[in-house]
Image (cartoon, rainbow, N blue to C red; front, side, top):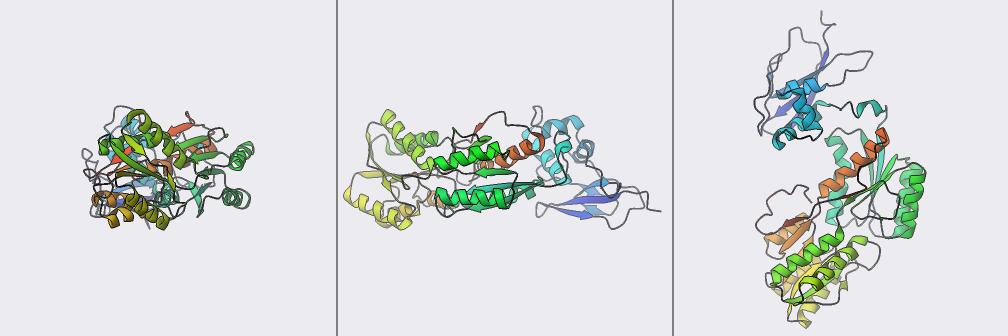
Length: 417
């Protein structure tokens, strides 16, 4: 009796937890299935599936054919959301004419239903695309967040991508090369996301991988003269200039600032931030004196001792700028010296420790770089290239500069980091 009915897969939206739960029917239904169109889209999306008396559910049906299932259609997404096919198409492809909040909810519904655009589907083969990710500075809170996004993003958005993430403790190019070789030669990844270290050998390896047909997207830092497919990340010089402008504002254009950096090799971002910072200060804040930069060599205790010494030796010191990811030592020094709020601090990255220090009055400003974009866009670019041979329209995709201070730390940034 039930053999002609399709099998069913449905997604329950729990309005209390805010999560979807997927289920597959054990047997076909013997009576017609109905579900209500969504009312005008709101913050809480409500669905009702009357056939089995489940509330807050969306159903998509897939008839078995030769052991497979029929793909979810754009019409099913439109029916589920109570909008037209055209509205769904515009929302899914970021076209004009759909309110942002409506587009976001349509995109979420499509993702949960497993909808794949026909623009992508014909090129997807039977296997999952395998992408390797190589990062450095494992102790950096920013890199820890970035690594987590790379690990979880494909599952969250149902992207048929397997990510293999490697994060090295240090900034040794030799180790980075070894990790690249492991991913390419032993694990046979199809593409690579790389936060490259400042090394000619790294540039050469990017070029050789490209020649072999293994595309590389650089993230967070770039090697511009390499043959990488694209770069996704901040303009570090502009970020340094932004830090200088904020410091100048905090100091009222007068004072003395101690710049702190990592070791003087291995990582482009630190030197680029410092270059932007010093250039902006020289051009627009002649009343602010910069002390010679000190290097902390990724040592938090060393930076604490150094800052305490500089505070003691320079009574006029009223600004500290750590361009490095290792800044907790500077925070401790400011607190131990009892100068929080008197000595102004500007840092990079919207990490939990930085935001906590803003709330505590130790840090004046934190500058973000959209970590969410950096952890997701490289995967999408590689996926599109590997499955459709579609190269990015732009090879340099710069993330936005975000600024947090004491009045907006509770507001979620567009790319939280």
